Image (cartoon, rainbow, N blue to C red; front, side, top):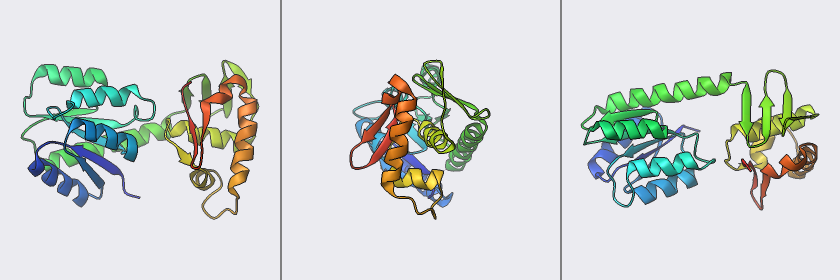
Length: 227
């Protein structure tokens, strides 16, 4: 599946131009024309990166950024702010909120594509190299294959460790049972979905009180929450 990019701008010409260039670069592009729509789309569609115009109706790009960075499921999304005002306060506030880049309008669509590619490349490299992951009370050391919950070591099987690691890497996003089978056993494995439920029940038990962080989304799958 192509990497998904959300572009939010209240100028139709900008949406078409940026969307066209990103699509030509191989990205799966979705769009929004105001702040509330951008926030709803980011929550629903889980893009890898969001391009946000600072001045949008309903909510500014800065306000959307603040909400995305506040929520566990969207906090890891990369964000590029664009603005026609090119004021220092916008750049400062944006970087304080955790955006990855800032571009002043008018900008070159080709430059935006290059910056988006660079951000995604850094993010993938960081994810591949990260050895210590922590969400809430649970910490996973990938190199040592160690898991602690509230500072207490949990003795997990290899499958339980892999399941927990995939939930950690999803950063609060929901993974279906099929997602977990594909990521842990491989797409060709003949694993029944109820097997996932059994492994996760045992995983919860081994994590003690911290096991409640693994939430069942009825009819869909599982996610790992901070609390």
